[in-house]
Amino acid sequence: MPFRRSLRASLVAAGLAAAGPAAADSATYSLTLSGIPLGTVTLQSDQSGRDYVAASKITPNGLLSAVTGYSFDGRARGLVDASGKVTPLAFEADSTSPRATRRTEIEWRDGVPTRVSVEPPRKYAADPDRVAGALDPVSAGFALLRDNAPDAICDTSIDVFDGSRRSRLSLGRPQPGPEGVTCAGTYARLEGERHSFSPQAEYPFVLTFTQAGDGRMRLERIETQTRFGTAVVSRRG
Image (cartoon, rainbow, N blue to C red; front, side):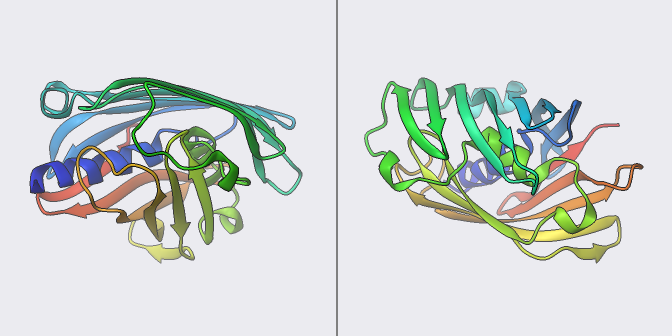
């Protein structure tokens, strides 16, 4: 269904934003499709020394809720080393989709999942033994999208494990743009059950960063193209 594919692309963009930019920061993003409001993405994160905590929530408006029933509320904690590498320790999320309302919990040790609970379980799931070094969705967003030095944004690739699916987020090199610095990226589902709204396994997107006023770059916008127009996640204020 083309419209559902467009919604899935919109939700991919929302999911990217939903995971914490800066240390001790909070932000709200608007989610739109062809200018039509679909909901909001709110997030909070705090880094104290090596420790970080991050939380995110995708709240649909009436239209998105009526068509998809989708929502997401996730939390993560972990460690950041001197080089900026993120290592998760724990992740939990409550999510709703047309298929089910789920509770997911993951515990990590040295970058390896040691306990994975998904209730109700999906019909097809990635093998946790194959995801060493991956990040949970909230930690992945914290790693890629938090306020950071200009030479520390984009130009990287990480695997993501949400308890059921293994995916990959790849970001190209930053490029100057009309509104700031942009980088092209791709979300790819590598293993696990296909998403509710589309069998498509790969989505391109573009990130836009601007100066945060303290020498760091701040995520302002995520954009992806769909058959029903441009899906945009944009920072408020």
